[in-house]
Length: 249
Ligand SMILES: Nc1ncnc2c1ncn2[C@@H]1O[C@H](COP(=O)(O)OP(=O)(O)O)[C@@H](O)[C@H]1O
Ligand SMILES: [Mg+2]
Image (cartoon, rainbow, N blue to C red):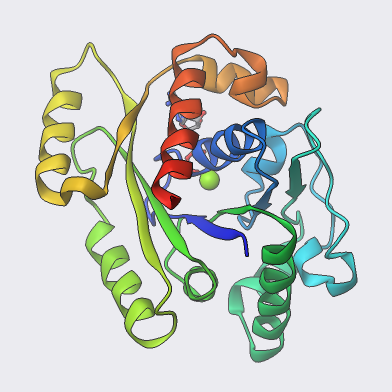
């Protein structure tokens, strides 16, 4: 059974999509069969991979379950885009009984065919986020190294605990990831120290640096690992994928 890893934080702009895309690519490049699923109506992960969002979300079409695109040259990296239709994403976000049934079937069938399923979540704690947590094995929380980094985090942790207690006993903290670390700013170091003291071992050793290459890669429609493989941030994402794999064992 593959590991379903949800990348979540109700705060926007903290690096969820950047992390989902580049962690998925790093896992695939390490030889793990990886599926990245874009669950955000903003479709940022879909655009980051240079793809045009379809009208229907493939997760809503049960028959399309086996049919995901491979965005890079790697046979190990499959991708499920988000939908450009607000109606479609509204349906998904409302998570009615029907939609929950479809989601469960999709997660089950994907878990059989992939080693990792990485889920890029919207910046929200709504019904879709709850349903995704209920079907995940691990939740990875990116936190931006800046003041107010903990904003929204208490609610997120309460939600995770509720899901752990009442819906999904398998769910585990996959780890907290420090993102957008700026060496030139004293505040980055202060925030890192505070978060490590508060959360301890659950924080990944890998820290993702702030790097302008992120934006350039996005506009080129490539992952950072393909666009600038020698950059510091590409190396950091490779290191993160190693840490994720090591934590499993
Ligand atoms: N490590 C980084 N260095 C510089 N810019 C980054 C970094 N990570 C993300 N960004 C930029 O910050 C913005 C928000 O990142 P994104 O991954 O979309 O966050 P989220 O999915 O949490 O909203 C994007 O413009 C992205 O290019
Ligand atoms: Mg995003």
